[in-house]
Length: 261
Image (cartoon, rainbow, N blue to C red; front, side):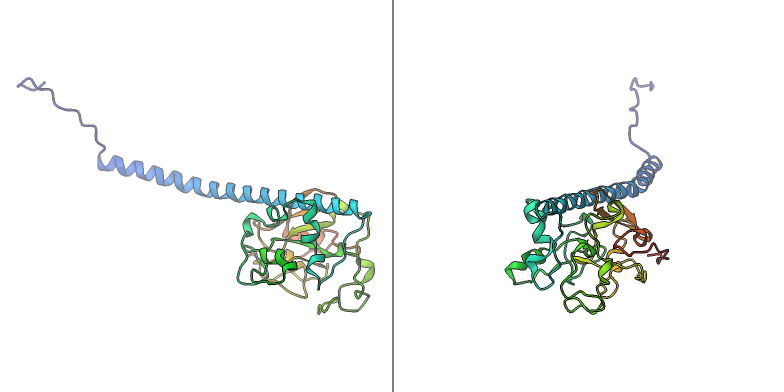
């Protein structure tokens, strides 16, 4: 107590040093937590993507059940004959599952990549309205019945690549449904991957006409893509392992080396 009978007031404020220490601790915690939160968000988007693919797999199974176990043909010149509108009746709302959360918007090109969906927003054909809305997934087109002009050594519907040989197409029931891809993350509506397809120069997902494995081989979920198989299970697949699956009846497991990014 002071000689005048007054008790001095207690200081409650932080000193500058104490404040800087608190700010430093908060900054360190944020730096630690942000990567973890980012990873958690990416994992959540990947789980949602896997769920979308699983639902597409269920719709495909329902279609086959209603069509005596057959898959639909690939008809390039008829938008109503492709997998998106054909599976619509078995999904209720295909728009709810057609987009991976990591690639939910179309870009400047009609073809997608790691971060954008494929699609043509300016399309005028009412039968192709689904193409205008876009999508993030593609089908393993070796599951289609052989197109009428897809005989050995001939082009299919004007494609420059040869879709064949005839005996490579998957027949139902397949021999190894657990390793036969059905739908996967893709930069177009699908493709015919071959074990002879060379790895891409980068993992950004650039569309290529004559190398169909590269349509699927992109680092959308780190260094993997999500996929649903003919037996109905969906999972992530490392990009190197795309060459180890049974895309067609003559596919040979192949070891590849991919670029760093």
